[in-house]
Image 1: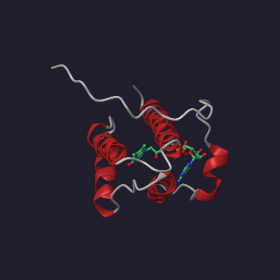
Image 2 (image 1 turned 90 degrees about the vertical axis):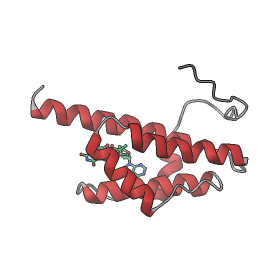
Image 3 (image 1 turned 180 degrees about the vertical axis):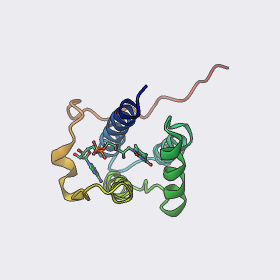
Image 4 (image 1 turned 60 degrees about the vertical axis):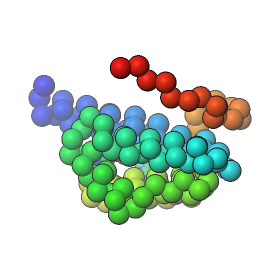
Length: 125
Ligand code: FAD
């Protein structure tokens, strides 16, 4: 793949990932259980370990060391992620996003139904 092709693929992966992460935090419960809080924190740490772009993954790991995930409620989680994305934006020379615009920017298309919090992980090796 050409250098341009690689960069385009990396940018597409980044856009898709940010969209998932932002819509997830904006749907995070207003009053999460400790299990939900742990799930969100783990999701962020696991994303930073498994993210397919290695350079992005290690930069995200460094950010998480400096700014651990905020999971006490939806607002703190979504603002925390917005500021993480802005840290990446600054490093890449992109404009800083106004976090007051999160709600108008992201719509998961899933109505008002709450996320299910009853599922437990069941891994097979
Ligand atoms: P993106 O940054 O992908 O943003 C997509 C859209 O989100 C924007 O158009 C805007 O509407 C909105 N947005 C922008 N900022 C915010 C914000 N703060 N909060 C909420 N919404 C916002 N690329 C690299 O080249 N090097 C890296 O080290 C790197 N690290 C990354 C780490 C992570 C965890 C992720 C998910 C991606 C990383 N990327 C990295 C990809 C990079 O961040 C961009 O996704 C990619 O360059 C495409 O940029 P873009 O200008 O299309 O907008």
